[in-house]
Amino acid sequence: MQIIESTEEFQIDGRNAIAIGKFDGIHKGHTELLKHILKQKENGMKAVVFTFNPPASVYFGKSGEKELTPLLEKRRYFQNLGIDVLVEFPLNRHTAATPAKEFIERILAGQMNAAYIVAGTDLSFGDRGMGNKDLLQEFAAKFNYQVQIIDKITCDGREISSSYVREEVEKGNMEKAAKLLGRNYTVTGVVETGKKLGRRLGMPTLNLYPPEDKLLPPNGVYYSYVSCKGKRYNSITNIGQKPTVNDMPVVSVESYLYGYAGDMYGEEIVTELIHFRRPEMKFRNMEELKCQMEADVEAGRKYHENEI
Image (cartoon, rainbow, N blue to C red; front, side):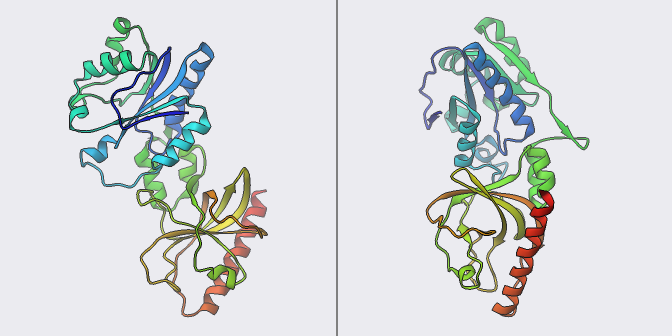
């Protein structure tokens, strides 16, 4: 996948199918947009995603929220999906003031050679957000591109959105988040060396420290899966600061893989959070901690066995 970043000066040759959006979370609604541009590859077009970096909500100070899918995680997902080109268009004082009509003519039609554009009903672009789906359709004939506007997808009577997903993740409702996303909520990172406390307690764990802009569910213990190098393992994961043994306010994602005895230090892993078991707790001593960990692991084994 080609990534175009940190520049306004680029050119994408050929005929291109373009999806425009923020794509935080890449939920079911986003997936529907992406399906349409991927389908156009059968017609000889490249599948191109156009998004802003930083997102408009961050740039304009409307949101200090952490992201469901930080930049690197988003890139990885697009690549695995089969996107050909990802444009991370820089959002700054100059680009934010681009008139909507100029955005269509110069960027979409000119630099990106748009032949097919797909977007949601809430599309907004250009100076003061004056560009919308109607303006995009108005200029379709002039610049020889086709427009496909996708209606919102609903779940339990509510439109699926990044905000909806965020609410469920913040509540620790991983099953509902998965329903909105169309897949389990994940945390990705490289395995780092920890204090090896789990190893001393007979339950060695994999530690990763997610990026600061990654939205995490409430601290606690979760049933999970961990994937590394194409293999997927049943696991149980603790998210938090490990207050029994740690006074530092550093949040880690620590997973125990049932029956795994290998070494993943330095490897990138993907942790899927599938069910919240209990909140993080501070224990009086190491013996209490070990007993609770053993109980958590046994409950996790049963959970995964019942899933199968």
